[in-house]
Image 1: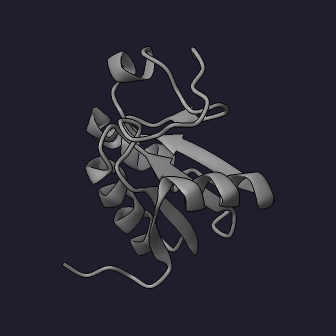
Image 2: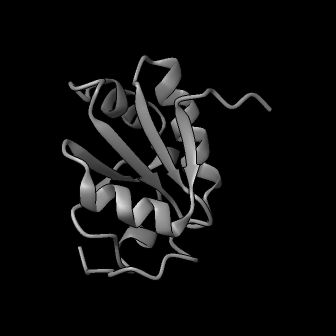
Length: 111
């Protein structure tokens, strides 16, 4: 599988440190609304990868292609697919949370 150089699978530790220390951070949760309701990483936006055209339109509607996008899902698979798609669309800083929210040990909040 092809992994573009500017998509990075980040460990939980790397993810937490980078989110805390970078500016222009946008966190995207690509799980379903049902999964989302169980708890989210603070300040995440819900963009359900299974929502078809809505997903495509929402991703393509994100204005700042140079912001730092941190993407997660339940286990890291859907978010990795999203990162690849975003890079194909010209986003330059896209990061995937390895292991997803299942392995995330940071703070979770109710949406």
